[in-house]
Each structure stands twice: as C-alpha cells, then as structure tokens.
Image 1: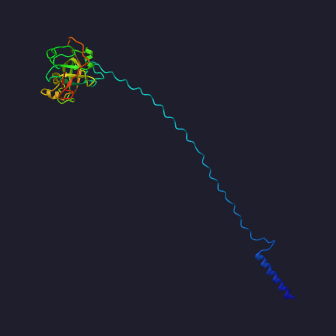
Image 2: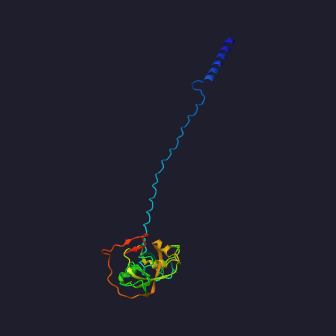
Image 3: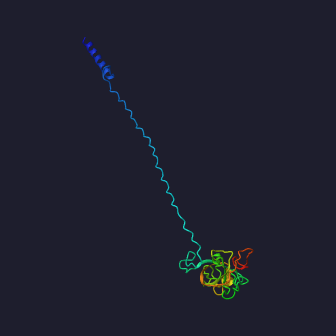
Length: 243
C-alpha cells in the first residue's frame, strides 16, 4: 500500500514538472515580443516656387545734340577753324596746282577772267593765280593778294618761304576747300633755290595761305560760267593746264 502511494506521488510530480515545462491553461506563459511601432517618415515639403522680381527697365538714352558744323572760314579771318593751329598766324590750309608754261604767267593771252591784261608784267610779274569761289568771290576777289607757302611735309623741294600772288582768274574745277591754280612761275617760286622744276613736277601739293594787305585794282568783266569751256589737262595729274 505504501509503495502504491509513493508511485502515485511520483507520477503526480512528473506530471507537474511536464506541465511546468510546456505551460498550461491558466499559467502565465512567456511574455510575447512587443510589436514594433512603425516609424512614419516625415514627407519632404515641396519647394515653394519663387517668382524672380522683374528686371529693371533700361534707362532711357540721353539725347546727344551733335556739335554744330563750323562754317567755312573766310580767308584773312585770322587763326580761325581753317588755320593749321592756334599759333599759325592766320595761315589756312589749301591745295595748289599750276597751268600754262612752266615760267609763264598762266593764260596764254596774259589775261584772265578778271579782265586784267599783261599779267606777265608789273605789278603782277607773272605771280598770278586762279581762285576757286571762296577766293574769287564772284569777281570781288579779283586783284586780291595772298601770301602762299608750301612746307617740307608737303614736298621736300618746298622752301617754306612766303611768296605773294594775285587773283586774276577763276578756278572752275577746285580740288579742295581753297584751291590756288597758280601760274607756272608762282608755283615754282615756292621751291628751294634750283628745285623749281622738281616742285612743278609734283603737279599738285598741299600749301598754306593768308590774305595780304595789297590789292591790285582794275577792270573786272563778266566772268564766263563754263559754257563751251573745256580745259585740256596734260602733263602730271592736276599739274599743267592748257586753256
């Protein structure tokens, strides 16, 4: 009887141990693992569009008034806008050509549009010139005396020494604002000694002039305006002119 009781107790103990090992209804089992809480990733905010400020309007251009065009200076106006520089003493820039015989007075008849005769004799002495309109002045410039010179920069044969010429004719074909179409004698007179022909061979040169104090008076007839007037050029371009 005692053995049976011990066996029953042993079975009961073993059963309890089995229950303890595997758990049972009503017995607390192992704590369940915690369920992880999902982490919410914050949404990236969309960038707010920024409208750039309008570009400033370009400034209105300031109107520029062009300087007035200086008027053509009259010969003898002193050191005006036509002079070579402020200390030129009234010298103005011009161009010179020549016509007729190399040692002549210009026209073959020793006359000219101004009506003077024998311009190869005193007081002219063949030192004559045709003048374009600013010099001839519709005939009012006839008999006017001008000092002329050519300097070394114009031609190596230039003497730079002033010579005096008298307007006796009109120049119908100017090549510059002021154009002296000189007699062969007057053109060569601007050269250094012994280089007259060398200078005349240039045909056309830059020169300077200013109005002189002497004026030759004489008859001035109507000036022809070129009808049927056709000069023939020969020799160097712009050089000797045959009427």
